[in-house]
Amino acid sequence: MKISIVIPNYNGKEILEKNLPKILDAAKDAEIIVVDDASTDDSIKMLADKFPHIKVIKRTNNSGFATSVNDGVKASSGDLVLLLNSDVVPENNFLKPLSKHFSDPQVFAVGSLQYSSNWKGKDRHGRGIGEFKKGFFVHGPGALNKTNTLWVFGGCGLYRKSLWEKFGGMETLYNPFYWEDIDLSYRALKAGYKLVFEPESVVYHQQEQGAIRSSYTQSEIKTIAYRNQIIFVWLNITDLSFLISHLFYLPYTLVKTIHKGDDAFFKGLIQAIVKLPQIIRKRLTRNRFKKISDQMILTANKS
Image 1 (cartoon, rainbow, N blue to C red):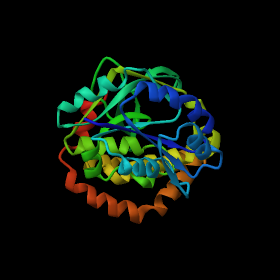
Image 2 (image 1 turned 180 degrees about the vertical axis):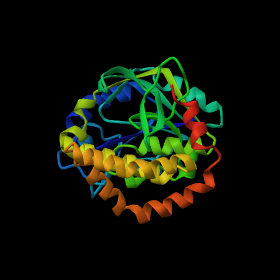
Image 3 (image 1 turned 45 degrees about the vertical axis):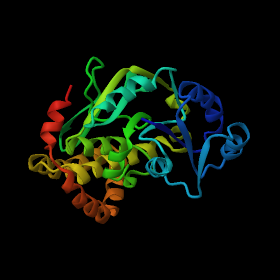
């Protein structure tokens, strides 16, 4: 199967210039596409000067991660598409362990083992677990001795393009960042497809160098994270008991966070409500893929 690599970029000239040679060495036979999300630095010029053989998609408006990778996947020619953040450096043999799983037609995506010192204090991660707790979907890192995963990280995940297109790609309501990879993975699981964590595929995530932390304040990041956590429930959760729990805990969480002097949840909720008409329309279209209940998915991916 042919592999395409899609790398989203926003003002990442220096890190792209540093990491692209390593990516080229690690993926010699893959098509590489950089999607520039209207950078204001010299990313485009640097790519043209130093990597003229790499395909570059130039966006004129800055939209965010989901829109960028959707554009990149649409332009790709591979049967499998690897999403790779510009701040991720792969080991030379990282693609083969990922691609072997796609002999199973039920596999939608496979994720790598990531080494990072900046993800909830964990040096190694890559497998996701979650639960529905106090009205919300809560996710975290899982044990690395298992191969199932609740989601495949968008920073380094290999996806089957035909199923990506079937599900409509990443959800742009989450722009500019966060939760879009969890959302897409969850839709695949709910439709009965498989996700795999592959520890033999290793990458190094230099997360502190990425565009999010250099372009947004901590308060803005927290607000967006809350907003998207709410949107995820409104888009995806269908089990009645979970929905009742959400309706009960939503006002409770709002009052609790305001009492603590944290206005990020309030801001995130307002931003989610503004998007409610779009959320309702998209939620209705997702029902046609539903085969697996929320409880079954979370029970299978809780540890």
